Image (spheres, rainbow, N blue to C red):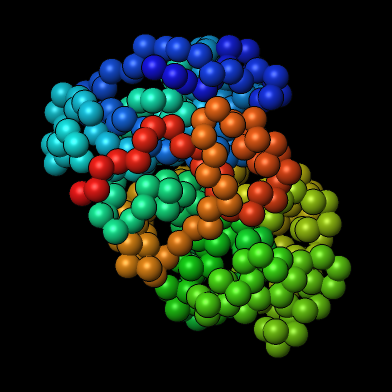
Length: 314
């Protein structure tokens, strides 16, 4: 089968290559899917650069959607031919950017949900839910989501709104109207952001969830929107957060995974009540373009690689 992977760590454009490999076999408790689409995320690029070191070669593509074509021992509730999606394990010689991938965790894809819409959900939804759980969002919270146009930010806005919280978010023009449609109040990022947020909120906000691209100016500006640095939690501006007393999700714990929320969001998405923006859908052969867009830090949504042919209508 075809797979996109690396044999040594380094810059993704230098070390990644498409090559042939044996299809993975599902272990007990796993399923294997014929991959239709997978995503390319910043996390994939960090893997190439040596995050979570392990045996090489190593595959990338941490979210997949496809059709079950093999079932491991002990697996129940799913059959060959079922349409599913989920996060792909990333410790093996191949991962989701392959003709076949194994999954430890998966979700049924509702018939009304396109594969590209489903594959955009897992990482954005889980990361957003983790941040909201760590912050302790309630219906009485006024929350600022810094970076609402990012996929995790887009998910966080929608999830927080579903709790009944008031949400203010920073975003550029690309996704501003879609964010407003969720009930969020949107302002631009950049100079004067804190003043604009405080004006919207009529004072400081209760909590801040920061998912904006790394920028040394972000955390200092966000601290001006709250009364206590500990009211700011980031997943992206880690160094300045640690220096200035804000929280970062990577030093918090213990982490409780809320995988069930991904399945719930898939059903909402099938009903047109939840979405993650998809920026580009590219064939696997154009993976370099996807990497370059991801490295720009503002791709405009999820980057999706099409691996296999579209599934037959169900």
